[in-house]
Structure formats: structure tokens, C-alpha cells
Image (cartoon, rainbow, N blue to C red; front, side, top):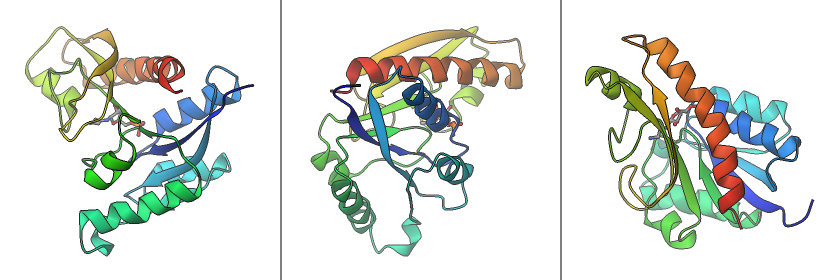
Amino acid sequence: MSNIVSIAVFASGSGSNFQAIQEAIECGELNAKIELVVTDKPGAYVVERAKAKGIPVLALSPKDFGSKEAFEQAILAKLQECEVKWIVLAGYMRLIGETLLNSYNSKIVNIHPSLLPSFPGKDAIGQAMEHRVKVTGVTVHFVDAGMDTGPIIAQRAVAVTDGDRVATEQAIHAIEHDLYKEALQATLK
Ligand code: GAR
């Protein structure tokens, strides 16, 4: 495989998107290498998933740092040591600050479980259900200083199963796992 792009995956939760990305790499659908998983939640299940795949983890609690800048400087030092070229957010539930934005200008992407600009922020699926929308979806976008803003790379619609949150969540996750690998393959250079 040529032109393998070094990436870091940032996650705060279960890490099913991390797993889908890693499996896409393993089966040759995505020309990338996950050099590092970064989490702001040392107890998150993504840590187990990364260890099972033999991928190094940087787990840092923001509360152990005096400022967001200090927290991101610690992350940045490790990203540079690992020669990471792109940051891939996969359920990372924290706004990216200036330190990382300046160093990874236009090289940070995110996935969000709605058709942005609808339902940014936390619990996008819950927000969609509350509004009783019939169609929601998934968005992959470049990251800027805003909350789930930034130019859109790819979107896919998902029908909402009437009032059934679990079914809707499952449908969204299945689409996410497909769409992210395709969008990454088209975007990472
Ligand atoms: C995903 O649905 C992702 O789109 C969402 O968190 C979930 C993480 O799932 N991200 C956001 O809401 C970002 N604003 P995972 O840990 O199983 O990959």
C-alpha cells in the first residue's frame, strides 16, 4: 500500500467508529495508519478496543492540567513525536482549542450523528427524536473553532424509526461506520 497517511483518532466513549476505521485499514479500504488513540476519558471503552488492536493510547484528564492550552500542548507533543498528519475525531466530546487548530490547520475531521447544521452539540439523536423529524443522518466535516461547524465533506440520510431511539441509533451507527471510512479515504492526503 502506498501513501499511507499517519492519523490519530480522538475518542471519549465506546469507540465503535475507531474500530470501524481500524478494520477498514486492516482490510485495505483506507490508506492510513492509526499511530495513536487520544482520549480525554481514561476509563472509556475505546481504550480497551485500542489495546486489543495494539495501538498506543494517550489518556489524559483535562482536570489534571491548569488550562486547555496546557492540556492540548501535552497532546500536541505526543502527536508530533508520532509524526501524526491528521486528527480524526470519533466521538470526541470536547471542543478543539487554538493550540491544536493552529498546528493542524484544515487537518482535523469530525463525524456527527445528524445532518448538520441541524442538531449540533450533545445528544444529536435525542434532539432529532424530540423534534420528531422523519429523517436525520450523519455528517463528516472539517473542524473549526465552533461546535460541529466547519465545511461539510460528506452526509448521508437515515430514516428515523418512529419513536424508537435504539433502532435509530443502530441505523445511524451503521451508516457512520461506512461513511467515515469512505470520507477519510477521499480526504486524507
Ligand atoms: C458517534 O455517534 C459520533 O457521531 C458522536 O459520538 C458517537 C461516538 O460513538 N459524536 C458526536 O456527537 C460529536 N459531536 P463511538 O464511540 O461508538 O464511536
